[in-house]
Image (cartoon, rainbow, N blue to C red):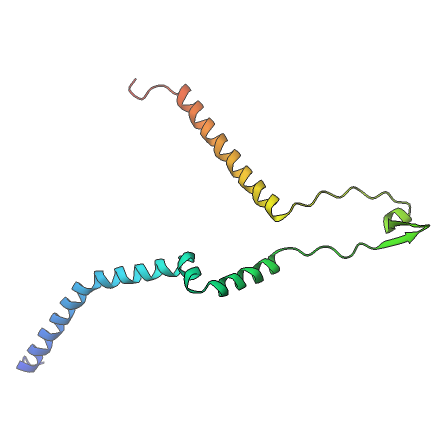
Length: 135
């Protein structure tokens, strides 16, 4: 390939463009990082699209919360209501109490707090009984 004035100008233009790209790249990365952070920020989206997010939360809550079991059949027999198990002479096991959503969240928070407290206590005990680092 011949070394002509046109190829030298093209090479110089390519080198200059590469230098511009190297100079601009950190700024482009910062802009991309900021955009990614903004996309994952729920407060930003709540500020821009509050009704859409409220609707999506309502739909998600409707789909995630279990429905009540409607399969229980009540039979009226001799003036009182009884379940099928009682009518057939079987004693039904007591049903566990159902927790609401707030109770579930409270239980989860209490469990995490107890685990954190146990971890802190274990750390304090191990520090008290371990030999000093200088000896």
